[in-house]
Length: 95
Image (tube, rainbow, N blue to C red; front, side, top):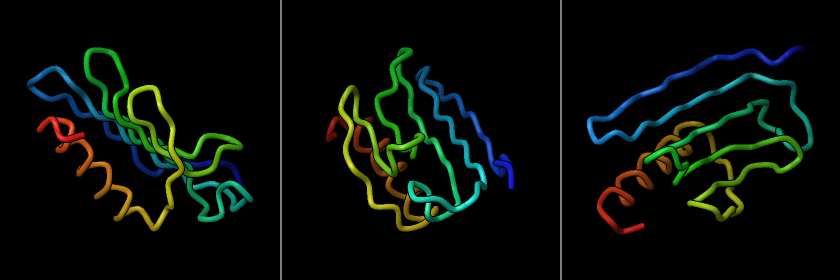
């Protein structure tokens, strides 16, 4: 089975920031046991400040500015919730 894009959204905010979400259905593999490839990004002034993804051979992880941390994937609903929470905390200066 080839990868198939199942969701893509790019949203621009009045403060000039943007969020982009991409989700693909892929064959299950060692680094994608849930059968999904995803990329959630929040960009401010051309810098990705928050990102969640599972890039090739890296598994699930998230980014805050230039640092990368492991992420335990617990489904798309939880991923979306974590991403939104991080954006709100960043906007409030708590992240």
